[in-house]
Image (cartoon, rainbow, N blue to C red; front, side, top):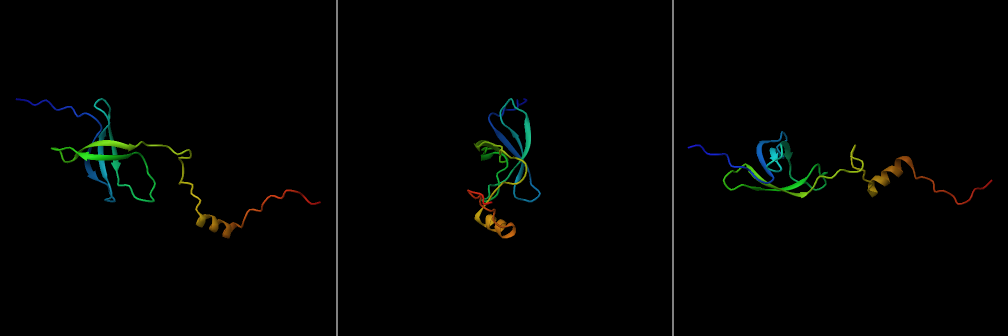
Length: 113
């Protein structure tokens, strides 16, 4: 008796390897039954680290320990300036800028001849 493969419904991910740095996992993901398979990586969120891609939660399937149901918590967004590092100007950054380059002179409201 042959068993017909069960159709996997919903957004699912299969973990198949660990990342080189050991902090995440390589996954094979299928967002819907009629969508193509995608290869990607998942990593835990860390405070202060930029988010690259979606934020998802994953729940393991009962009888298949490496197959997870995926729920998108925060969809992927693109920054207006997606090239280069984040543009952050903290007070320490501004202080360092002023120490190196000096303050920008304020415009005067009148000119003296």
